Image 1 (cartoon, rainbow, N blue to C red):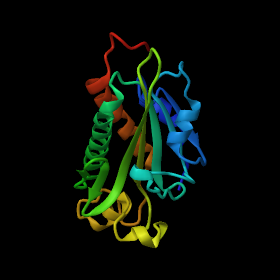
Image 2 (cartoon, helix red, strand yellow):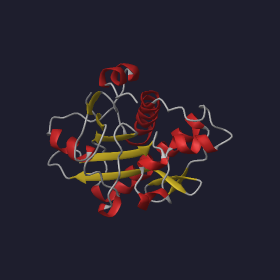
Image 3 (cartoon, one colour):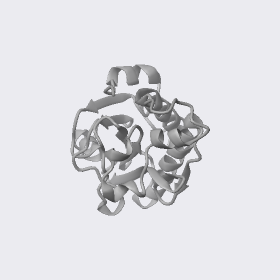
Length: 216
């Protein structure tokens, strides 16, 4: 296992909105909490916070999200889309669809979205999204898009409660004839993170970003 490198990730992304600033934490309660704590009225959108381990990661309906250290991608993104808080489902739909499509393209796995905010492969959950929005006075509302992806977990990295319904990309690649890595080989998390952030940035620009009304 190797830790994520914020400088490498930032350099690999080049000119972008999502990923214009990247922070990698060894541990935090949840990346959504960390982004919120770092956000002020002057913080530009695009900040991304990764954590190698979350002590209180969460999903929808306050469900606990397990995040084994240095095994997955746990990240949150600060955005300022010009949409109403009531439209937050648009962000969830965009994010989870992009995660599923990136997994399918990068690894040849049949990833599908299970509405409203999960990715499943062969009946096993591999990823989820949690969007939280905050109203802002005289400014676009603040949105935090949290993403969790099980990448290099082995079965023993999941609690007994989750083993029956959760899996990681590496486990599923081991079982798939389409696997693009050798059995037992770890996925390069940094390469996958770069591919995901690039796709999130591209699709966010297409769906939510208006260059005439955002400052860079």
